[in-house]
Image (cartoon, each protein chain N blue to C red):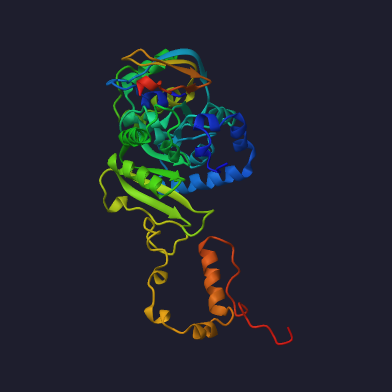
Amino acid sequence: MSSRPELQAPPEIFYDDSEARKYTSSSRIAEIQAKLSERALELLALPDDGVPRLLLDIGCGSGLSGETITENGHQWIGLDISPSMLNVALQNEVEGDLLLGDMGQGLGLRPGVIDGAISISAVQWLCNADKSSHEPRLRLKAFFGSLYRCLARGARAVLQVYPENLAQRELILSYAMRAGFAGGVVVDFPHSTKRRKEYLVLTCGPPSLSTAVPGGKGEDGESCSDDESSGDEENQTVSISDRHRPRKKQKINKKGKDRGWVLKKKEQMRRKGNVVPPDTKYTARKRKARF
Amino acid sequence: MRLLTHNMLSCNIKGVTNGFPLRIEAEKVVEKQLEINHDFLRNIFPKIDWKAFSDASRIMGYHELPEEPPEPSVLESDAEFLGKFHHALLELHLEEGALICPETGRKFPVSKGIPNMLLLEDEV
């Protein structure tokens, strides 16, 4: 079976009592959620003046992300479609208010009242049609349209998503832009499969300098939204002189894995976010003859 | 659900032009203590629809708030008013009851403090 929960069942059915219990018992899930919400709040870039704001948590689930908001001193309203997850949130006695609702039906909120919105691993659910009445494009449109309306001018929304593929990300982003948002995708750890996380950073209002999208973590100053195309540029150009070289000569050059090769591999692993020992004078040192 | 959230919620049914404010049917109201934060109250005050807020507080059984919206200057000086505002906004919770759309009369039940805002297929 697929490992993506989106492909298994609609959210209100997938997150049943047993799945919801995992969110109280598993410290690993809690830790990941806390990290994601911490980063989302960081990207939200609220003014640092100590004034508590009113934030929206879309797909709040058991309130793990809400607890991070509370720790940062803000008030929040959480929305989720799964009653089981909201029950867990009640047991955890979260500080924010909870609503049972479907983001694909639009957020029923007054215009311009919310100071910021975060969403952790929720928006990709909109791309699925779980009922015959569901039309993903209309649901995305309703969601982003109502989100744009309820946010105050200049407010940000940071949505952490797990798009299934490139097309799905494009779809989500295009509907966000159509609703009037400015912004883009921030990718943390783009070279790692496991730690790679994508955040849609959206700003209410037309694009300007202040709405520029911040850079992602662990990407060596590359711009974040076009990391697929700029992957490894030196690998894309084919050297013609190499092609006509006699085969034998090529083999002679490939003599063992030298220090340069080891350093290159270590750098690759570091970019993936793995723990790699530091480079020292002992790195890839030649062994003595007695070995 | 606190009155803060009630003041932000509006009815989302297709075709409804004025879905705010939702009328409250209170069956059970509880109070939960919360530390007062003046900065938050000042920040949220301009966004509150005062009439809906004071009406809602009366339905919840709290009669201390003035009917007319107070001057913003009150927020700077009057600690007593801030206390009342804080109590009504953040400490009163609607635990059981319902929210009713002013235009269509559609009932959104509230149980265990969570309003069920899910719409039926023909309301989207």
